[in-house]
Length: 343
Image (tube, rainbow, N blue to C red; front, side, top):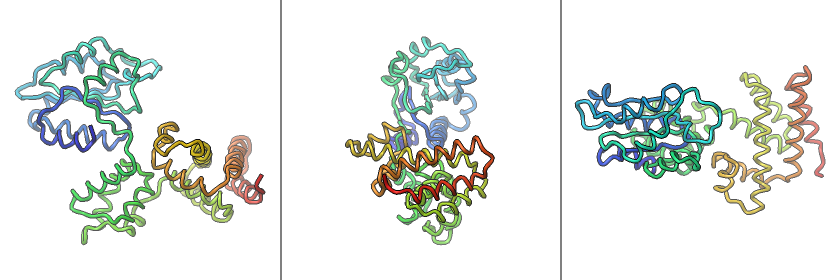
């Protein structure tokens, strides 16, 4: 079931399933869906007929006892289960013991008057576990972890329209770029953009440029392009700006290395015939980042990508073993890389 289908179903409150699974990471969508599930219960009944339990601190048995209880002076009870790590392959010892046999018994015959919702902020469940298999069989699943760029565009556009605004295509693209297509970040920026454009209710690219700050990852992506263009002055200037913005040098270098690693992997695997979707799944990277990597890697030789990656690895070693200023180390790296001849 898609997110919009689920939201529409919850809005009507009719013919709801007894068990739902919200799978995937995405703070904004997790919060929005939880509000929608809560709203299924009338406001005056929520104190008695709505509950949310964190499995990191509360035994599963407590939540199941609540789920098996009849609604208190109402038609329906909604019980949310957060962070059910026992459904995954996570091996670290959990702080709380959970009775999974009781959960399997409940899933075999769920209460008709209860809507039990599992909010699982994970990429996937452990399909080898009986309880995970049973849950996926019984529950209506909404996967929020595989939003494509197109999904993000539609979701934001629909929300802007619902708020009584419009957003220019260029403004939407710039917003996506500045937030790395992170829906949580984008939805966090919308109130500010809408407030700024109250007179004509049209979000322009100027509004996005003026109000939305680029993420560190996006700034580093710009830095990667300057490095590969061998624009020493431009790269050092942008690096200095990041340092002045109080970004940690080791963190900047780590993200830089990660970007170059992604470019190398994308170039090699794309030559082997991997599509954008398969690359995102294989490398466990957001599809938007894969899209940008594929666009960038075509312009550069694999030898340059490898040389830059190895050079940044040496910069990291020097940062950890010497007292030299990070900006100087980066400047020396850029000078050496810009003067290297293709292998």
